[in-house]
Length: 265
Image 1 (cartoon, rainbow, N blue to C red):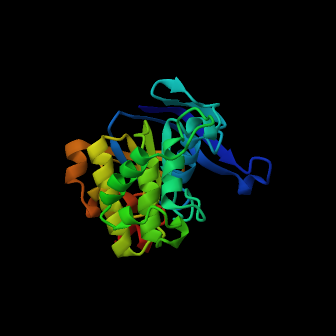
Image 2: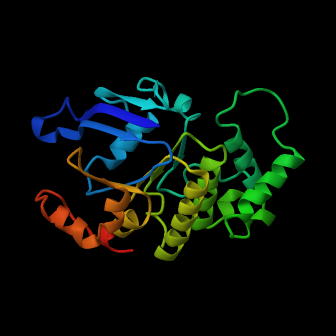
């Protein structure tokens, strides 16, 4: 479903040599349909740049991006939106605070469709939204007319996740989408993520700062360092992987910064 070929991205090329930053260093990767891939790595390892190149917000210096066998390398991010659902780190991103829950969800259903002049709301859609919101178990199905800006960060992130997956995108990108939440709320959102991804068999790339979450969720794990993939495990091999194994791998990388965030739930 996703193929990236020989991706390279260098920042600060026009500045002094010591300011040059190789964010992606000739990365190639294939993710099959239905795979749930977690991605970890230290600060500056290339995680977010990889996601941004895939989503189209950053243009690679070299290489190609294919989604469902279509070359989208030069396709603008707003045109890629018909293929991709994204949830960002900041709960305030991805939703319109002054619009109601129903209005935000209605916009999400139109993301991949041709725009035109017709009624944006109907009874069937409202019932669908109530049904979908009920699956979150947050009591939001009775608050369709409430402004989304009045929700808590966790509630808002859960709704953003629902919006990103309403039309079952070909690819779901999660950019440390629980990093700004407290541990209890982050756990709820991660469990919702796992439920939605698993039930809908969504091809998913989830960047996380937390090693434990990377081990617990998904069926494949990637570790990045200095713009390169230094670990790629899946299936039974991933299931057997332990936190101690990851720490040993990190320990073997002298230039990799290990932070408390990566260890603690």
